[in-house]
Structures are given as C-alpha cells and as structure tokens.
Length: 303
Image (cartoon, rainbow, N blue to C red; front, side, top):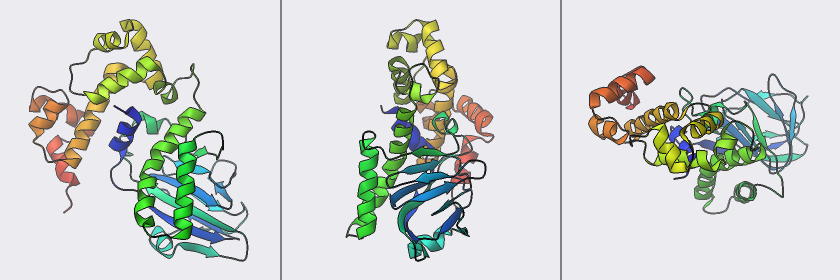
C-alpha cells in the first residue's frame, strides 16, 4: 500500500484541467482563487509569481508551483508588468495568452479538483504556496516529467494529447513528494516525518490497506514493534492526531470515495470500513459530513 498515492487518489474529485500557455513580454496573468489546487510549470523562459501577502518569487525553467488552497495569484514577466485576467476557457483554447515583442515563456497552467471541504492533512498542512525549484541533483522523476511535458507541448507531436494528461495526473504526487523531501528532518513533526518514519508509515499502510479491520492502538503498536505508549506518541507527533482519530478520518474518507465512485449498497460500504451495522455507519457518517450517506450520494448525482 502506497500511502501518499492513496491519499492523493482519495482527495481528487475529478480530472485535472490544464493547458499550454505561451506568452511574450511584457505579460501578466491574474488567476482567480479556485476551489481546487492551482499549479504551474515553467517549461521555458522565466516568470514571477505574485501573491497578495508575500514578496514576488522569480521562477525559471523546470520550476514547479502548487497552490494547495487555490489562492488568488498572478504570473508575469516582471513584477511591474500590467496584469490581465486569465480565462481558462479562452486562453487554454487559444494556447497564447499574450504576444508582445519581448522574451518568450512557455507555461503549463492548471487546476486539480480536490476535496477542499474535508482536506486530508497531507494537503491542509501545506503552506499556501509550494515552490519546488529545478535542482539537477534532486527530484529526478519530477524534473524528467516536466522536461517531457515541455517537449510534448512545444513540439505538438502526435499523441501529445494522451501523454500530457497522464503526466499532469502524476505531477501532483511528484510535487508533494519533492516538497516533503526538501523539508524532511527526522526531528520535525508533520507528514514529511510521517512518510519517512518506518514505524509510522508502516502503521499508515496497515490502516490504508485494511480500514475495516478492528484496529486498536495496541494492535498497531505490536505490528510495528513498539510499545503502545511509544507508538501513540510517535504517530501523533508525525501525523498530527492520535492513531484512532486518523483511523476514523480515513474510514470516512474511504466511505465518501465509495459512495462517490461506486453504487454499492450502504450496508456493503459500512462493512468495508469496519461498521457492523448500516445504522451505526449512517450515524457516524452524518456526524462527520452533516448528511446521511444516502443523501450524500444523491447530492453527487447530476440533475
């Protein structure tokens, strides 16, 4: 069980939207706040990232930006360049947002559709802006993917329409992994530690692989070779909440995904996440989501 991949899959509520954006200076593009997570890749040229409450950040070829909470922001060739609103419906189709006499930049801009109402701690604990700079000595998978996307989008070769969306899907995991590796410290709290501490990650794998099992803290501690107290302390410090609190969170996340993506009976969903009765499951689900599971499923069905 790959915990990070499982978390990202659970957070997604639909396909990503993205498009090639070619600009020539002077240029500036304002991106409205979104319900998903915005992302940008600088494939060629340079750009400045402008956010409301922080200093401008200069970006170069191979740099990746993720805005986990869809913060309003702008990209420009210079912090003082005029800014115009970016309209994905128009600019993605035209593939050219600005044509001035200055230097050319090629960007990939897009949005991931993620569950922002109940974000997983992997997402909610991130800063508003995540920048992974190009570093020839690190994160080879991420930068190889960015390089391939740049070639595919610039050359517009046959098959690019199939290659690029697949790489965009992989990009979210690659950016998150690179961020955690960049900020990893054995004594730090947070998911950088949770995904590298052998005992914690092993217990997370057990929970994710079998969310319906009747886990206790003692059981998880025994499986990872720690005392109950030592395991509970390490897990809580790394993950940010106690083991059984996280177990409940993941059970409800799994239930929501099953209700969203499958038409299994509620009793089957209840059993898969560890509830012996449909009534007990419905009560727990309503307490967490505010509506019964049947209503939640109906709300997802297009009218």
